[in-house]
Image (tube, rainbow, N blue to C red; front, side, top):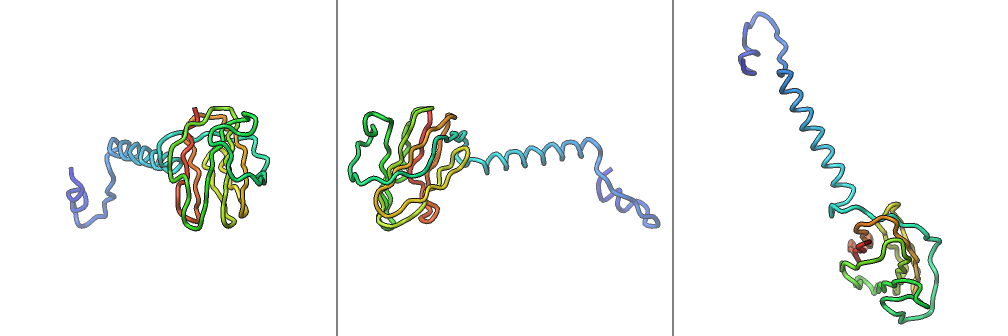
Amino acid sequence: MGFWQRLHRGWGHVHVVTQEPSHMRITSVLVTLVLALGAAGCADEAGTPEGAATGTTGPTETTSESPSPTEGPGGAGQTIEITVAGDTVSPSGERVEVPLGEEVVLEVTADAPGELHVHSTPEQELAYEAGTTSFPLTFDQPGVVEVESHDLGLTIVQLEVR
């Protein structure tokens, strides 16, 4: 019996129109599935797990303008150079492989103060001043970690933690 047949069956009485129990189960399963997928999509737009970051004790101010792009001082780990000049940021969304469990240094050279957002577990906000600032990070979970400037609306670099 269809929806309208149940609704119009006998004008003298009010009838409660309900769905069949099997339809209700299917509907509730579909709603649950859509909500679960939506929540998973909000957690990480790229669909990959985020790396866990540890060992961030705060920025380190340096005066060096040209560190090595792959190794930090004394081979301490990988260094990723980030340059912010006005509305121009380098790198610009590139994906860089970083080692799981080893220190990675984000070295920011900027013409004005700003803030980086590191979308790891837990998420981090790294404030920097004009000049050069270093941020040592260690990631304990494999996945892709996006480093962004929310002020400029840009993804600066994607760290592929392996």
